[in-house]
Length: 449
Picture 1 (cartoon, rainbow, N blue to C red):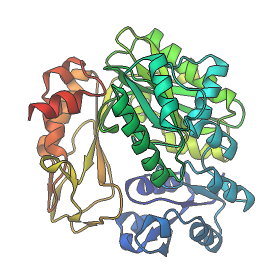
Picture 2 (spheres, helix red, strand yellow):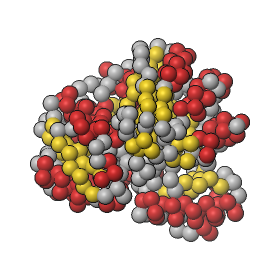
Picture 3 (cartoon, helix red, strand yellow):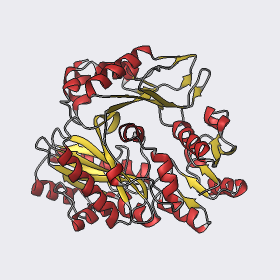
Picture 4 (cartoon, rainbow, N blue to C red):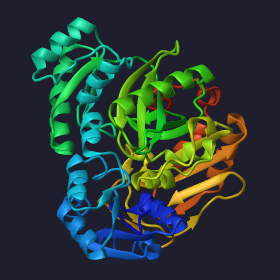
């Protein structure tokens, strides 16, 4: 097992990993930018090193600075968390060449599955169901038009190296396709330094359901149930729950085995997530693989009674998973809402600033994963998520009621947050019936005003 781990991340996920390390008897090292100096997660880490100014490119995305800190701290592993360098194959290679374990999949697996085009090619090879679309990258808008005419509108343009909803555009006609194609390429080039895009059929009103995977270096691959992430805005997830309201034991088995088959074909290890779209008839289609731990991993932890960060660290250290597929049982219902410092009434404008008062809900079945406290100043340089509120109960109905209660207790002053929107969602009749899709927030809930 590792003796010391550097966490190449910040905020909530850095704190989550520090806590896992402490429970496992592993020393933790955090790195931070000047904007994060004094961050609460740094207080409980064993060591902390400043690696640069606020811009991510000069701190959390600067591989040379992170590796310098790793050498000074003499760590034997690096955990990238999510975002930043977590899906960067070059970073994984640098760690490897420096004799430092990368707590994630191999560089080869990241390249194979982290790129949507190559992941689709592998999925085709092993028989994973896909929506009609291109096998290779689309070079120009004329080719995109030809493909759309062949498979039929609507279509969606996706960045091959993308994630987090960036570099994606839906088109219902040729004019929208040309504009969307150019916008997607431009956005992808800026966000991922790779403007490659592909085109596929756009499924109307689907559910977004993902399978949590964990794999060790001894050939064991386990799927820990599914998460329903259908409630989104601009392809950014707002609410996640497990199990999915549309799930059946047979569908879960099929999706889990399909995701595991794809991961095995890629030689995948540690934690990852295979994402699918599911239509009204229960047909599912592969979207992508996130080659890292995800923001919403606690949802799966609650319903399967597993510690995914611990299992991820163990797998990266070469140990066998402490559980098998037969041990995994989905019980109860969990819901997570992402609390962002945003002004919902002003087009979700980010609201950095100082938290002047804070009351965190508690009670049975309530979990709060966050790094904030009274007096903490949310910097304007990074993602606006400031925490994740989770509830767990025996049934979905009770979980929703518990989330309503928890949200009603929550008080964050000094900045605007998305708490009012989540309260609106929890009282929405269609959400309560489980009758939503990936466009519901924008097309229905927000359209109501």
